[in-house]
Image 1: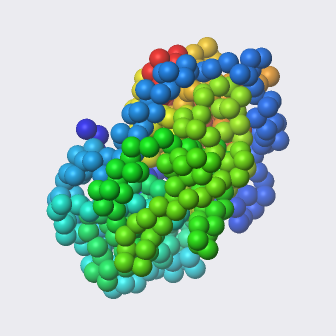
Image 2: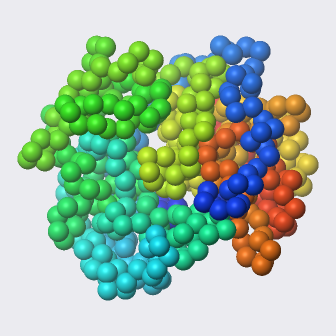
Image 3: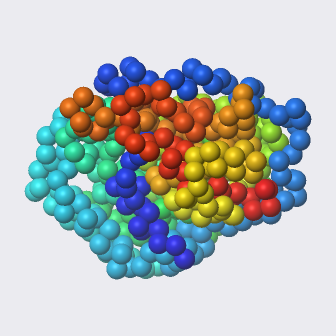
Length: 445
C-alpha cells in the first residue's frame, strides 16, 4: 500500500519544476509553444476519430473498479486504502509549526496564529467513522482555515513569476463525492474527512451526513457523468460548480444531486442537466470523444491543488480519465504508478522522443516527471505533443534568482516548451526531466 500521507504533503510542499505566477514581466514574455501548436483539439485527431481506443466491454470493467474506489470512504471503515494510521492522522497538521509562512502581502504569518490553527486542527479520531457526502464544490485544506499561506515572501506576491501556491490547499472536492468524516475542528465549523484519494479539512456547511438507506440508493444506481466542464448548476436556489468528470446517480432525464438539510443530513434532489452536459457513465473512449474531453479543459487557468475552482496537472488528468471510467489517484507521483509504467530515466532526450513517438498511445498515455504529469496526444509536424495544465518554465533573472516564464493554463505544447528562452537553467526543459511513460489502462500499449 502506497504511503498517501507523504503524497499529500508532497502536493503542497514538493519541488516545483514548472510553475509560477502571471503578475510579472515573466508572464508577459510567455512561451512560444502556445503559438506554435494549435490550441484546439481537432488538429490532433486521427484519420479514424470514431475508432475506440479501448473496447467498451473493457471500459465497463474499469468503470466497476472506479466505482469501488469512489465509494471506499463509505465501505472501508479503517481508511486502509489510503495507508493512513491513526498516529499519522493525529499529527497531520504538526509540520506547519516547523516553518514560517507568509500571507498574500508577503508578511510573515504570526506564529501564535499558526499555533492556534494547529490546535484547532488537532485530530482526535472518532471511530466508527461517519459517512458523509460533499454537497458543493469544496476545498480540502491541510488546516481548518481558508486563509491562504505561502512558503516564501516572493511566492506570496508572485515575484519573478513564482507560483502563488497556497500551502494549506490540498485538493478540491466535487459535489457528490463520498466522504468519511474522521474528526471535527475545535470550533465545529470544519470536518476532517477522507475522499477516495486524499484527506483534508472541509467546511462543515459543504458536507452532509448520510445513513445506510441513502448510501444504498446512491451506490447501487446507474450513473451519469458530466462531460461538459464548469457547469453552473442551481439546486434549490443554491449555486454549485460541477466539473467535468463528476458522476451522479441517473434518474430518467435527470441526475440526483445531494443537498444538505438544516440538521446536517443529506437528501437527494433531481437536477435536469442541459443537453450535452452529461452522458451515461462511462463515456465511450474513442479518439473523437477523448479529444472533446481534453478540449473542455484547454485554456483553463492553472489552479494549485484545485484552488479557485481550477485544476493543476494531476487534477486535469484525473478528471479526464474519469469521464471514461478510469480511476486515477490525485497525486501525480501516484498516477505514475498506475497501470503499466515504462521507465525513461537515464535516456537521452532524443531517445525519449523516439520512445514516446513509437510507443505512446495518443489520448491514453501519460508522461511523468517529478512534480508534473502530462497527457500525450500524438505527433504534430513530426513532433510529439502533450496536453497539460502547467504553470511555466524555469528561468534565471539578471540578478541570478529563480523565476518563471509563464504558461499558466491547460495548453498543448511540445516536450520542449521554452526552448527559445536563453536564460534557462541547464536541463530545465520537460524532455530533460521526463522519467516514465504510463499506461493507466494496462492493455492499451
